[in-house]
Length: 436
Image (cartoon, rainbow, N blue to C red; front, side, top):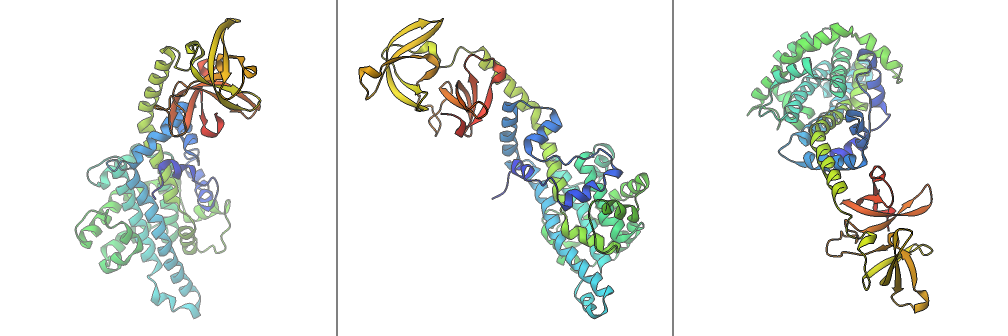
C-alpha cells in the first residue's frame, strides 16, 4: 500500500547517516535547511499555523491531494525514492570495482563490474534527469523540460531542494570525479554505451518516465538535462568554494569513514544514505502544504464563524422537556444511563431536570444539571454513535476529570468540541478514546 505524504513526513528520521551528511553541508548553505520532521510540525514551520482544527484539516486535505493522480506529488516522490533505491546497486558495483583495483588478489572484480568513473558519472546524470522529471511533475508541466529546472534553480530553489543540489554536486560530482567533473561527464556522454545504459539499475527503474521512444532518444534527454544545468553546477562550486577536500573535512565532523579515498567515500555515501528521497519528500511536502494552506485556512475560518453565529446546537440543556427520553451521566460510574425527564426547574439561573432511570425505582430519581444530560441521534451519528450537536464528556489527563462539552465537528474519529461555560478559544480536537 502506498503511504500518504502525511505518513512519509511523519516517518522521516530526525537523525541518521543521511541527516548527518546533510548537516555536514550546512556551511555551504548556512541556515538554508532544517530537518523538520512530522507533518504538523512542517505545516507550522512553513505557515506559522497552530490552530488544531486547521492542522487536522491540512492532514486530511494533503492526503486527498497527494492521492489525486492528476497531481504530480505522488509521482515526484516515487522518482526520488526510486533513484535512491537503485543507487545502492550502482554503489555496490562501484565499490567492488575500487576494491578490485586496490587489492591485487581481488582484481577479478574489475572484470565483473563497470569502471567506477563510468558508473558514478551515469549516476550523477541520471539523478539530474530525475530532478528534471520530478520538478516537471511537481509543477504540473505537460512535458519534462530541462530549461524549466534551470530557471527554477536560479530563482526559487530553496530549503531541502537547494540542499539536495548541493549534496548532488558534493557527493556525486566532486568526490568521485574531482573538480573537472563536468569535462569527464561530457566525455562519458559522448561515448555512452547504450547497451550499458539499458542495463543500468537506475535507468531501468525510471526509463518509463524518461521522454523518448527508444534508448537513443532517452540518452539524448539525459545529455540535454546535464547540458542545461552544467553551468549552474559549476557556478555553485565557484560561489561556495567547494572542493573534494572541503567536503570530506565537513563530513568528518559528523561521521567516521574508515577509508579517506574519495572514490570509496562517494560510493560509501551512495550505499548508506538516501538524501534524494529524504529531501525529495520534504520538497514535495513543502510544495503541497503551501499550495493547499490558503484554501484550508479560509474554509476552516468560515466554518468557525458559522458555528459561532449559529444558535446553540441540538442537545444543549435549554432544549430538553418533560417526557423526553435522554441519557444521564453518572459521575461515580463514569457512564451514561437511559432515563426520562419528569420535571424541569430553574436553579441559579440554569435548568435542572428531574429524571427517572430506566430499570430503577422511584428512590433513584434525582435532579440533574443540563450538562449531564444528552440525547442521541442514531440516524446522523458516526460509526461510534456520536453526532454533531451531541453532549459528551471529555477526559482531561492532567486534571484526571471529565468535562462536559458539545461536539461541533467530526472527522475520521476525531471530534472538535466546545466546553460548557468556556470561550470558543478553548475549543479543541480530541480523539475517540478521550470522549464518552
